[in-house]
Length: 194
Image (cartoon, rainbow, N blue to C red; front, side, top):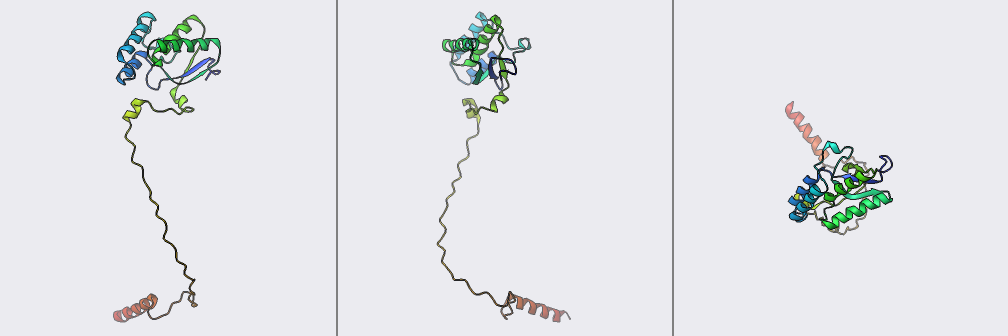
């Protein structure tokens, strides 16, 4: 995530949204923070820092909204500066770090030659197990009730001594046996038919 794209900082893109304005509205709808605070933050970035909607003009940057559950970075002064400035924005406005990420990134990239790798969210899911967001959990179907298996103890087995096998090796010719009755019934049926 760092050496192949020649980056010193890597973070995954958001799985659904690329634009800070869209992310702000999604945060307000989900009730993740007070709406007035989110509006104040986005308006400040828009009018004082030049925040614009994401477009192809920002390429090679592929998104303005990260999925920040994992950050991979080289521990050098520029990445330390970025994380420090980013934390300051989170502390100054709302705890929704995705709203301040692109503003801090763009300020630093305008002043120094610095690259950042915003990799696909599916790549992040290959090595990170993440708990679900509240809005995802609220839309999930309720779990099915657990299946309870009650094991009853096996009844005690009484010991029976082995019985002596029939010495005629399966040829039961007793008059009451089924085989004898079947043969007799066939003989009677043949006599009736003749």
